[in-house]
Image (cartoon, rainbow, N blue to C red; front, side, top):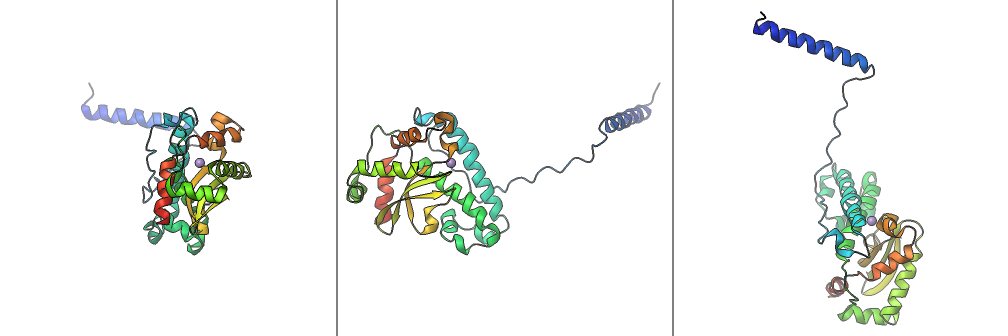
Length: 244
Ligand code: MN3
């Protein structure tokens, strides 16, 4: 009869043989690679959508919203955190501050902050701009300013749509404040008007990831759908605060 000690010894010997055999079966197996370093947890955070992913149906489908927010936007935040990980002075700033001062940032991280900081800022604003509003319209001072600049709301809609449709490749169409004046503009990639010294009031994501799942190549239908879900109360308030 085996003693306990012999039994343990035997178990160990069997394990060693098995380990040896399995190493033979995997001749190229070496020590496993270290697990990837976890993405830095901060300082930037993915904000919640603020409503259900289904809330904008049928204009923007739930799956697009989920992927867009939970994957695309989350990745911008992760990569922005990585970019500032070795720069505590940058990590202490807001994303707006970073983007306004882009040319003054260290060259090593400038491009990453432009792309991922821009992605984070632009999308954070974008989620707030959306609401199924059943024909809501700009109000107050913004309504007056749009009338003055574009000869009416319809004039604005037409010009905004033209700007969005004119983007080549990925980018954004914007209604911005240039000082106290309204301006229509577009930016490529995740560039933001903040860097050019302007204040974004309204922005439309014209990257394919924002619409192609539902609309395929029909950008015009997506732009028309966007017009139906602009949260004009939010935009009107944003304008009012900015000019006050
Ligand atoms: Mn996007």
